[in-house]
Length: 113
Image 1 (cartoon, rainbow, N blue to C red):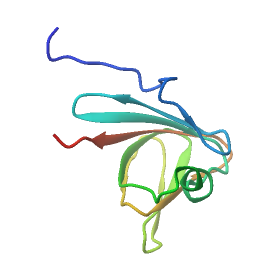
Image 2: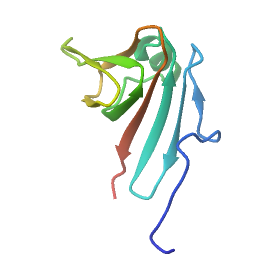
Image 3: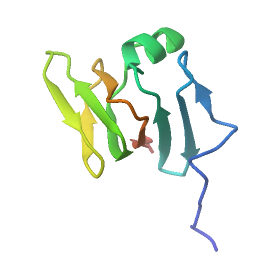
Image 4: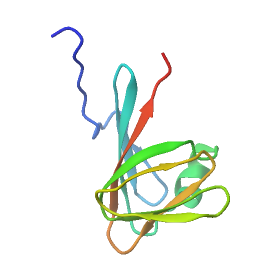
């Protein structure tokens, strides 16, 4: 059907494995991308992802499916994000898994036309 596109977010072709074994993959659609991350206990952007990418974090809009994550803005304010909650964190922030179970989260990136 014209105008319809679908893709799997759990895509082996786009999967990135972080330094601690956490993973993130994404589905690329026409107007955006949907990422799927499975972050292990102890995972932290600034320790396990940032050094690997060589750049600061970007703005993220996401939704936690399971586990929990703490997000921190550039001024040090923190917010815990539990399953069923959406979040947005500005570029340059940090995030880490809270607790002893992995955190599975979706993130959404709109592409510029």
